[in-house]
Length: 381
Image (cartoon, rainbow, N blue to C red):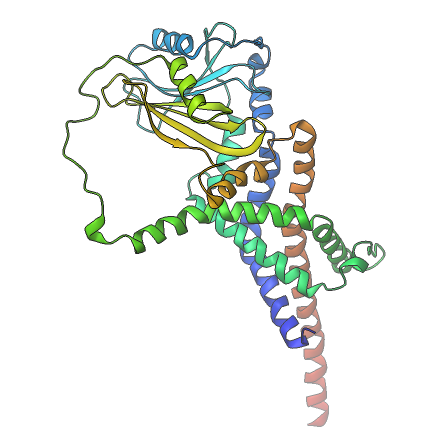
């Protein structure tokens, strides 16, 4: 049985953790609820893209790359996104000659012919994702820390509100503002408890796991064992013929059976050190971090990552993103994630309002008690 003193401390921790992180939690949770419709938002913001034909047999990757190089001579093609269940078109991220290093143009291409349609008018969905994952400019560990803070709020809330079953259906509409908001706060937290634990855990994992992994490697790797970088010529100084992208994709699918590439990344393309990376999902599996890097000159795989065979923690890591964003169950699951994802945003608002109302109530009680104390002192005198 938890003592009253411990409950009071947990209540204080719960209150201050919510107040300190409330605004950022609201931003992250609200944007996260909306960003499940990232692809749909991008199509809505650029209506011309939704009108493009969907091809049952999309144009080859080689045809897409040729069209891009013809339309943007001298530009660097960095990434090609393949058509999927929502987007009927190819997309490519191109850095044009003379453009700043952090400036890329998103280009749409027809899926049936690979013909360049032109730059995408709006990337509203991508901006929302950047807000949710990085708060636009921050490192991802900040959002991971917010996920950990959300787990603290969940754990302390469960201990504080021990009568969970009774509070599931408790809503006293005729009482004061604080009582009404408190009932809404508790019932919303309880009804969405399983989803909140899932979102907080996966968010904390994706934000903080890379940070701990890098720290562990730094601590456990002696300085003498650090790999030395060989001296070599500047990358991109030796032109070389490239293998077919489609042939390399076939090689990637042989290396990782069931690979369904979502993105093809091109690095140092056209040089002797060029690489093509194929990243995507696995057919019939929830994992989303399968990747094959192939030497573009020889067509030989350089690095293969199959989460099904890379160990337990690698498999767990591959499940985090699909579980967090709910992009594996179609439109119905996205709507469910949207409505449940709005509840943490409501909890951050309602918790702050409850805290502010309680603080004002204490001030009013203190102000009411002060004149009475002063009057008693005068009378005694």
